[in-house]
Structures are given as structure tokens and as C-alpha cells.
Amino acid sequence: MSTPKPKDRRTAKTAPPRRSGAKAVTRKRPASLYGPAEVHEIFRRFSVQRPEPQGELEYVNAFTLLVAVVLSAQATDAGVNKATRALFRAADTPEKMAALGEAKIGAYIRTIGLWRGKAKNVAALSEALVRDHGGEVPETREDLVKLPGVGRKTANVVLNIAFGQHTMAVDTHIFRIGNRIGLAPGKTPEEVEKRLIEVIPDEYMRHAHHWLILHGRYVCKARKPDCPACVIADICKAEVKTTDVPAPQVEIAPLGPPGSTTD
Image (cartoon, rainbow, N blue to C red; front, side):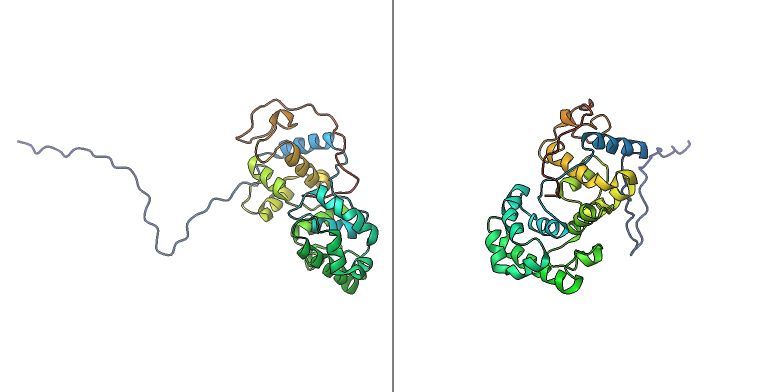
């Protein structure tokens, strides 16, 4: 009598155990879910909507732009404008602002959130500009971020608007859009900034951050995107989108005064 053969038991393949000290493999995020032609079309449509995009912060020169952006952190553009109209009439240069002093600057901006710290920074950065830069706003990020109250985003805004440099100032709107629609996925603003610069055609970089901010503020909103009003709805790859029908490609009237920046 023959011995019965054992049943063929197929077991699931398991991954070999990781060697002690071996690093886990992490997959690199794609720079974008969109090909070059799609990215070009996205920004072409934005340029049709707003050929010369303007933000909503008011300023009269590079220095007042710098101050307005510093003051806009955790504050609304409308609130900043209300305070800076009188402030900039009194002091529109670093010399005048430094002479005004922290206490008087604070009196002008008391309606803005975190005004005490901001008044201190505005006074200190004005003094630094007079002392270290001859009263001129520097044209490099390295010099700008050394000024009190000036971070990378603020520096990028000033470099882009005041000096025409192709920088990308990633605020909450741009960070959300970069990840939500997969245009430039990233875990940090710096990652999103780097990837946007990589994928956006150079011909559109001058106004790209304004287009993205305004799109995020008025269309691709944080709580509920207004997809029927979206000019790129047919291209968009966001999981949350509700329509594939794009809004008409027509020019939109400017929303604010000439001269602006981010929230």
C-alpha cells in the first residue's frame, strides 16, 4: 500500500525579514500629476483670466511692500490696508519709519493681530535697512531673510513683485492647491515651492504665485471648492472635484489696488 502524498499547501509569499539596521525604502513623490502640456495649459488659462494679476495689499514702493507683507501674517489684507494707509503717509521710507519708532508704529497698527511684535519687527528691520543697506531693500533672499520678521515666503513675495524675480511664495492657498490637485505635492511649503518652480513654464513664473493664490482664495477654496467656477475643471485631477466642465475662459476684472501680495 502506497503512502498518501501530503496535500499541496500553498502559502502566501512573505517578504524576507529586513536586516537589522537596514533603512526602509521610501517612495519619492512625483513632482506633479500633470504633464508639461497640461501644466502649460493650466497657466495659459490663468493668464487669460488675469493677464496682469493684482493682489489686495496696498503699497507705494519696495519698502512699504516689505512692511505690508510682514504685517499681513495672520491678518487680512483689508485689515492691513486700513492700518497702513495712515502709517505709510507718515513713513514711506526706512529712515522715516526708524525715526517714527516702535511705540508710534504700534499706535498705527493696533487693529492688526499680533501688533506689538510686528511693530517691534518693523522698527528693527527699518533700522537694519538704514544701517546695513543704505536705506534700500536688498534684492537677494539671503539678505532679506536676515531682516527682523522676514521669512522665506515674505522674501519671495518682495523679490517677485518689487524686483520681478521668478520666485514662488507658498502661502496656505498655494500649499493647499499644490497638494489637493496634485500640481506640486509636498509635505512642507519648501517642497511645494521647489516642485512648482520645477514644473511651471518660465514664461508664466512672473505671475504664477498670484494666479495660484487668487485661484485658491476665490475658486479652489479650503472648505469647499467652487468647481463650476473653475477654468481648469476639465484638466484638474483633484479627487474632490465635482465637475469636468470648465468655466468660460474670460478675463476677470482686477480685485484690488495696483500692488499686492499674499494673505
